[in-house]
Length: 235
Image (cartoon, rainbow, N blue to C red; front, side, top):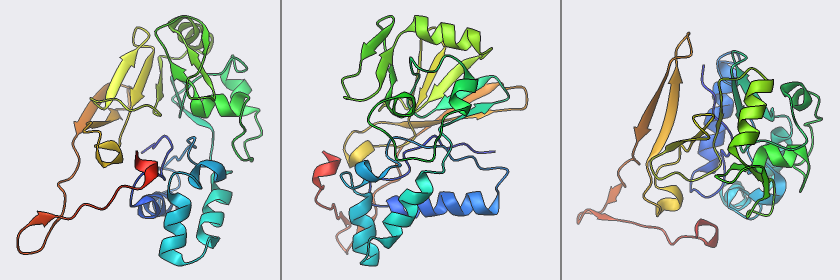
């Protein structure tokens, strides 16, 4: 099974290709592909960071964008692997102490500006203990004590999330209670970061694979790389 953890669109030239492939894989292999929602799978963010513009440029209409953002409202807010690994896109919420609380949320909405759904999409682990105000302006920061309590109360091994640029592609925090995986190499075509994915076997033994971006395509007899001007949402 594969489980991408959200943010399939925006801040890239090929958002449509990416999300179309993932949806096609979900249709072809419904029991082997799990797609959960990220903070960019919503109407407001995609109008700012590129997906709306790409749909309009490629198709000459906003209908494709509208259909996809309607679809995003149906994506699960998180996943759980073998009752042992909790997988939100962002992080934890002070409103959600247990997995059952997540399951009771009405997810069929645009991502709100605050509240538990917002927190699952936007929150980040932090070195400071307790809950903190997020510098992102949405969600919270949460410390090791919050992670340990949540994992203990829900009999979890650890939390896997995405949402943050990590130069090596992955980072363990909170005494291995939280793993951040970032799978977009050379983010925004300028960050120079590696990306990573995690493999799990049937016994939940884990291995992490890091990878670099694909080489830039070369064009013309001189072999010079054509670099598009970066739109504002890449900066």
